[in-house]
Amino acid sequence: MTTLTSPPLSNLLTQLFEDAKTSSAVLAQLSTNTPPEERTRLMTSKTEYREMYSRMKEFHLAVSPATGTLLYMLARTSKARSIVEFGTSFGISTLHLAAALRDNGGGRVISTEFETSKIARAQANVEAAGLADLVEIRAGDALQTLSSDLPQTIDLVLLDGAKSLYPQVLALLEPRLRHGAMIVADNADWSPEYLSRVRTVGNGYLSVPFGDDVEVSLKL
Image (tube, rainbow, N blue to C red; front, side, top):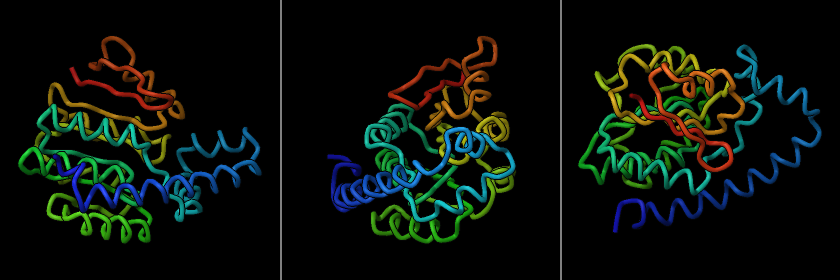
């Protein structure tokens, strides 16, 4: 048994994924009222992301169960100790990453989220899972919260916040990525600039898609 597959975390994740499924269905229904071109503009905007995500503060916007398991597996197999997450939301991905750290013997997940109501719920979930000692959630815009006070080396990164900021967040973290560090970008298809960066030979990454909309990259 692992921390991920044992109570209290296993029971908590079952409930959170059920809640996220319901949340996603409601959001999908609401999105039918938004023209595709407007949705694309908002998803790729570098200036309106805070307003857009504030309007969605009641929605989980969570990784899939498969992606959550992938995160746990990558963190375990890489023996990660220092993990950075862009986009906490309600903490589903944070829980998978922290569980891996627990089973690796310790470490720290630095996560960042600008919606205060989401931070409160994520912190409550982390505490309910008994993983609070492994998690630091920073409040504010990631371009500020991840610009300083980072570990000397970073073993794994999850990008799951505003898609338009993926290239900028990666640039902030890149100097501290160790060789062999893993970068997982959820909904990466919304950031062509990011995909070009990690897929272009000579930029220092080996990168492949996972599932429908996740990009998994290795820092060479």
